[in-house]
Amino acid sequence: MARKIVVIGAGPGGYAAAVHAAGLGAEVTIIERDKVGGTCLNRGCIPSKVMITTAGMLDGFHRAAEFGIAVEGRIRPDLRQLTARREKVIGDQAKGLHDLFDRHGITYMSGMGILSRPGVAAVRAADGATREVRWDRLILAPGTQPFEFPAFPFDGERILSSDDALRLTEVPQSVLIVGGGVIGCEFAFILASLGSRVTVLEALDRVLPLPSVDEDCSRVLQREMKKRKIGFLPKRTVENVEYADGKLHVATGPSPLARELTQKDKERLFIDVEKMLICVGRKPDTEGLGLENLAVPLDDRGWIVAGDRMETAVSGVFAVGDALGPSKIMLAHVASAEGMVAAENAMSGNRTMAYDAVPGAIFTAPEVACVGLTEAQARERGFAVRAESVLFRTVGKAQVLGEIAGEAKIVSEEANGRIIGVHIIGPHATELIAEGTLAVRMRLTVRDLAETIHAHPTLAEIIPEVAFRSLPKAPES
Image 1 (spheres, rainbow, N blue to C red):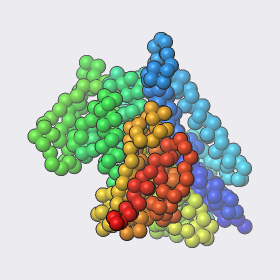
Image 2 (tube, rainbow, N blue to C red):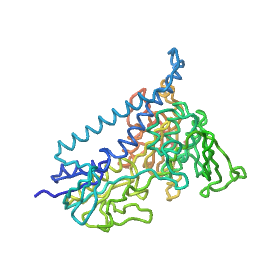
Image 3 (cartoon, rainbow, N blue to C red):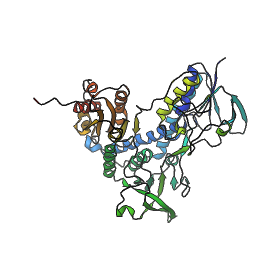
Image 4 (spheres, one colour):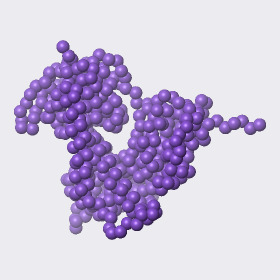
């Protein structure tokens, strides 16, 4: 008899686990309370990239004269058509997932999955009807939702979540984005390109203040934000918000997380904007799931706890994806990889999840991508490293494209040239990082990349250029 596996959550982690388990011979049921594809497909990766594509095209139209194209008339965004295109892309992808489930004999159930007791999940449909599904192994992939400040909760009109921002029907005249991380910075460039006056407020001292993002990438991105007239207010938090005269009156003050505050940093600053977009992180979407009925352990912030085999402390219960929280890595492609590991182990395998060669992709303008250790992380961990960079303006293809902002950096061990980090900000950085990811995973050296022939003229040529620069210098005669 086939092993019965129930997967709760049909996002990237859940559907990857379901398909892989079915391929290994399991009888699989996947339960989704919302829509197939999870946050990534419906309110995250895919719809935001549809908007970014439109924003990039608008930017291109505004630069048309540089490329010998005369554009007559007014160029403006059409949010109704943009919404229609976004919904079509999402719909096509969703249909593809349902087809995938059908091909693999996976039962898809729409409703709230509730863990009523060990070995049983109750599925409550929208009409209130409830069915029970038995399981031998359980894979949890419930995902997350935007974090909300109790002092100024989302209202969908003036104070927005990232979900709300994807549903805008008009381009706001002005927006304050609270949070200069990945989501906040991506929306800053989207909205600025669509025509909004954008200001980004960040509690720390730089944009993209993530440990995985090299400080040089943050520096370049901050410069590009300034060129696009995107305001940036570091070391600040929101103290109070009032609505009057059709505007949000936002009072900001010094951040308790910031260090080395100047007198100017300590002063209160007031901003009037049409809308405020909150992008300060996510929280686990586990309420009502019934985890307590199985005694599934959570940490002090409510994130599910699982080991590198993706199994929780409860035998036969696995967990993957963003609901594991920042102790893992909250990215869609990581969730998919975790899902495959969980599926194999649920079928008596013995795989562990490796997090040391995970690429990060940030779709700003220019894009930012990274893998492995930053220069600062490497030195903090005691590595003797060499860090070399090459500017995109030196690459012929970047000049052809008219996208010369940015650089690529390789962090390598000084003794043997082994590549332990690659960091890129520039055109198509999110595509170029694949080579860096392979280099880190396969423990390649800078000589391996330097001696690999790359096609010309391509943006990828920047990788061997940095590798050449990182080679040991010949001794002087």
